[in-house]
Amino acid sequence: MPKMANETAVLASEAILGEELTDPVWIRIRDLIYQVSGIYQAENKFYLLISRCHVRMKAVGARTPREYMDFLMARPNRDAEMRSLLNEITIGETCLFRSVPQIEALRKVVIPALAEAKRKLSFTKLRFWSAGCSTGEESYTLAMILLEETQTSLKGWTFEIMATDLNERSIAKAQEGVYNDYAVRNVPPDFMRKYFTQVGTSFRVADSVRKCVTFNRLNMLDDSKMLFMRGIDVIFCCNVLIYFDGKSKTRTVNHFYNALLTNGYFFLGQSESLYGITEKFHLVHFPGATGYWKTNPPDANAGAA
Amino acid sequence: MTTGTLERFRSRITSIDSMPTIPVILRPLLHCLDQPVEQIDVARIVELISYDKSVAAQCVRMANSALFGRNKPVESVRTAVMNLGMWRIRDLLFSNSLSQVIPANRWIVDPSVFWRHSLGVALVSRKFAEILGYPDTEKAYLAGLLHDIGILVNSMVAPEEFRATFEKATREQIPLNEAESSALGFTHCDSGRVLGEAWKITPDLIQAIELHHDIGDPERGGPLVAIVHLSDLLCRLRDLGYGYYEPRQIDFAHEPGWLYLVMQFPNLADLDLARFTFTLDEYAKEVRELVSTVFTP
Image (cartoon, rainbow over all chains, first blue to last red):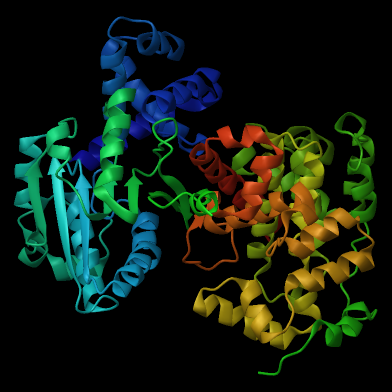
């Protein structure tokens, strides 16, 4: 069902589009979204941005993009409208195996690098945190990837996945581990066979995967709880920070920084960035993906010498 | 595996029958574009296009492609040039004329992969130069476009050895220059320099060709080399590489080329690198489109 709804929305707005793509107001809306949330809409994905805006324009009764811009910038409830728009933009982002380049970077670069460093210290355990896990798609994807790795390159290793979210209903749904065909559309066929069973029209995640993940409710703005998160190798926090104001973003990202071990990695959603939030992390490039790395600054040693 | 040296190949590189020759329209084109933008002779460029039927046809085809889709089909070269704009015409001319450098059956790296990478690095280098405030953005473009011509030399003068080397790099997912160093004893940077000298292109471009992988002391090559070096890295990580996955991470804060540029151009420290990367993905799409137009049979 959601698939139908999404496709219809896109098709309908594609029909309206035409000349509209070139309206400079979209560039301004794009820049505003980036400034507020760190989410960047590439120009080749403008049709998506526009179709999402059209949904909101209809809801608030704005007739032109320029008028809608006003709803986002000048009206008293502009913050609420921006949240609704961000909701609209990130809708459908939650599915299993959402970002293949990010998964490949994890498998082929991040995990080997972490494992090599840990092996030297005789550690054989990796800890992951899926922060703002929503209904569990990302957490289970991670679990399946790691299960595969421990059968190949990480034989004898153990791993732990902590998944947290503010919303209790999301947590309950995540623990259930049942997804519709739209949510599993990107899952590779062999993973589908190995880790899912069909229940009616839905798909249930295998127990072997479910027991890899522990779900907990956590408010990321609660400093006292965040202080307990320590010793993590990789944190994922996709499309969550966009809902925080500037100060809360910085505070939360600082908590993430402290929660990570040195050489640990922090991943945001595919088109999010930490620009203007903190400079503690190093932005690193992987093939087709970017991540943030906790490492000592290059000049730290030079300064000491 | 026998280890050759660049010296052993030098005679082959410079011998007339096997060396890639500079395309006929490239030299006047380089000359035309070596002027300030406002002095570029548009009529002359249109004339150059008309010399080459296949280039002219490509201009028309591209003007009609989805990327520039117009309601009314474009039929004349003149209209195509008007619609595409000088910059894209130039992209097309360069990639087309350079793709004639070696015969169709001598390519070892897939030509469309090669030009996607070269054109990608050219466009990213120019963008980089713009952001930095480096005065000669066109030089950056050219350096990016030509940086890998050594791959063409290697394909011509040492086809068997180079094929095995390229296959090894692809299989082991390692950088091409590393595979070349160990298998051939020289890299496409070395052979590219030799070709650049034979073509008598300017020394700063030759330096960009020679040092784009191993920039050594950044002072030596200056900003141009650093720009091409970083653009090459970025392209290889944004699906505009040699057509195979290179499992690695690049941390600009640890890159000598980046650190050098930050010192030379202090405004770079404020660059939103993440956003810059996102815009590269937009480029990538355009580059793919352009290259597929050039290589549509």
